Image (tube, rainbow, N blue to C red; front, side):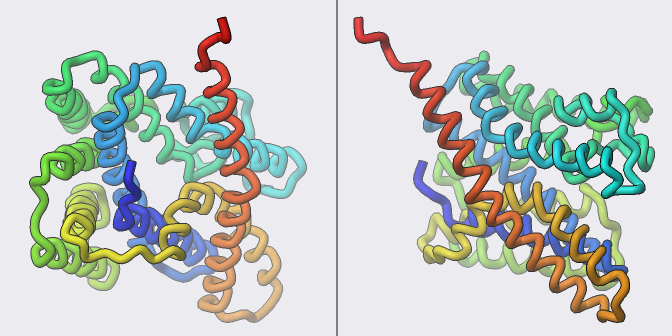
Length: 333
């Protein structure tokens, strides 16, 4: 697929927003809107999966294997570090159980013994539980004719969301998979279909959508509007639609640094809290202003993510890609 620079830029900025959210949270500051980077990620995920499956058709099993190879290895490594840190006392507030650790590794929502929240060992990994759920449903729809896939997926996710609002389930699994946030994946897939069909707004409307989305996020942060998927989801959809509209109309230049930031966004998202924890421990006994501590945490978290991208994610991805290619080669006979 041709690189979509707008999508890459959004991935990078969404990752940085989450880093800033966690850094501010740990230093006693406040930047709750940074958590909306997750909503942007979910819309982008739906967009990418739909456009990829159109341009590079695969079987459901191949799709799931590709997704697990892309998502799981780095996540398992960081989770392993967290478990080791918990066992050695580096994270005194962490309570580990075998069941919760296994659930975390296999993307099964379960309440954390440390907080009671539906979080895995690596807290930000809660979003990957949603991603894997989306991948499973998406893979199932690949069995259908292409013309039925999007409507079927939308119907399934809408049914889950409606069931959640009616029955108010309390189990970790159902409480997770019936949240309205799952509809953001569907919205992203709809945008992907519009993109492939060439039914994207012009540059002027695209710019207006971007401006409106950013203004909406700012309003949530500055004047305390409701912060949930019902407010952030539509803003994330508008932001992604606006960016791909600008891209379609040739208004987005290739900025290598931002493209690289998008490429490394997954590693930044996974690894940044480890660096933030180290910085917080280092400055705990100082009188450092919270904004300086937040800045150092953001820089450290981002740099650790970039280093992990180069040293862990890329080599693993290349290794798994080569192994998969070797298995798929026809025999010399």
